[in-house]
Length: 309
Image 1 (tube, rainbow, N blue to C red):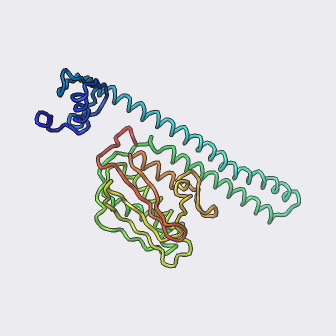
Image 2: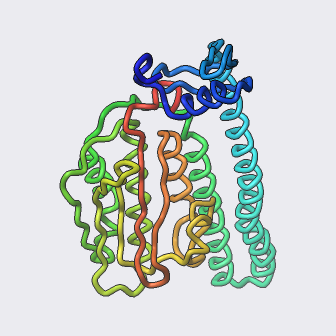
Image 3: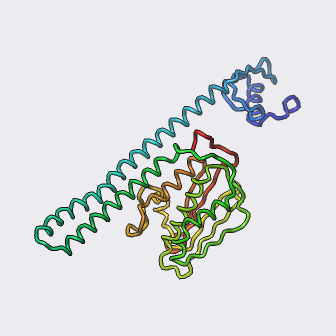
């Protein structure tokens, strides 16, 4: 058979050989890699040691089925994400509202008692709660815009994207005296430049925020070439992440330290941007006190276009 069709894959030969030797009839659907097509195949044996086949090209049917399955899986994922989003938003927005309501009651009492110092403190706390709610709403608006607001997609130097992100977070890095090493050979990535800068910016801010008591805080940005593709990474020597938190840290408003500043939406935003680009983001860490490595993998070929980002 290989003399006639040199590119025939072993599983086809095995199936046809079974038909030729046993006389049984087979009906199956399979993919022919050499042709890049799906076929519905009926194979039978007209006499011992021989086989004959009837092919029906079902590539479009198979592609339609795969697309339906992909859309169903995507819809299920979106529904789960929406449920988590709704629960989280209702919970986290309720907290500043409770604060406002509570201090309005105290404000009324302190005004009645003519205690100006306490009135000023009450107003400060109400203002802080209102500012926090505004920040939460701004971050939620930013997250909702990912996937709908389009910047032109193009090939970008990863080193340039990283340096733009470093400029945006230079103040925070300076506060902690964080040393940042950008290794050479980062190459290029295709996508929405401003959004990709946001990814590195959020990862840098996250690394600086969770340095803990590290005396020599350091962040390294580089690239690894693995069997499954090129992986960019942002590594730090901070507090590290226990295995049980590796998935939850990408959730909305999830923070390793509830007392830390920010809304806890940065990693969720980074994940959303990477996924819109058809990529993956994950974290690797040996545990508490061992630092963290946030990894990014993007498609090797351009995936996104005007309607996708």
